[in-house]
Length: 201
Image 1 (cartoon, helix red, strand yellow):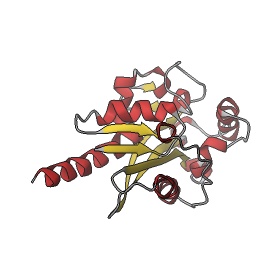
Image 2 (tube, rainbow, N blue to C red; image 1 turned 90 degrees about the horizontal axis):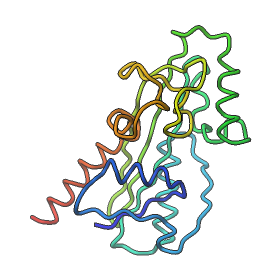
Image 3 (cartoon, one colour; image 1 turned 60 degrees about the horizontal axis):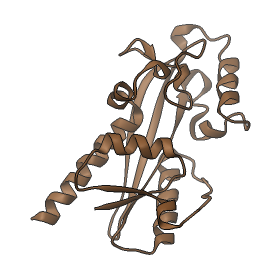
Image 4 (tube, helix red, strand yellow; image 1 turned 60 degrees about the vertical axis):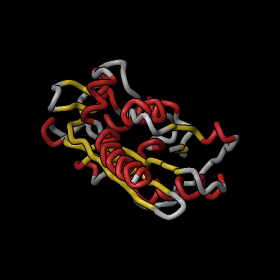
């Protein structure tokens, strides 16, 4: 089973490979098929944006035998009415370091226990006959400062009550057990296993 991921983010593909870990599934990037798309995310939700990315690449590939997946993810902070949300990657307009700085600035007067937030990840799947979206979430708090060198994005600021550490301090193995992407991938994996089982039967 060949799956093409609609992303240029190599961190995402690496995480997906580690989390899926299925012998019958091969993961490719759009670049592996000589495609370089800049897909405009015009949706209002993670689900809509993920589906836009998946459908656009599926149509560009023009190959019915392939499965295309795309994810859209971000951080939602309750004290900021769900911001940065779907704008997580471009929150400051100046890159991730500035995104983190802006988030800390926005929350500077918010007390620790009111800094609750969640990461959300929606994975859209497009095949010849089917379209699906699987969404996973992971809950935590926004720390007052960055901690750890691991992960990417808002990971250094996202405190996990389960581990009592920030995502930036977790090993990839630890993060992949509890992250929003891991929870979405669990649902995707279940769906893929069903597809493989049905094709064998």
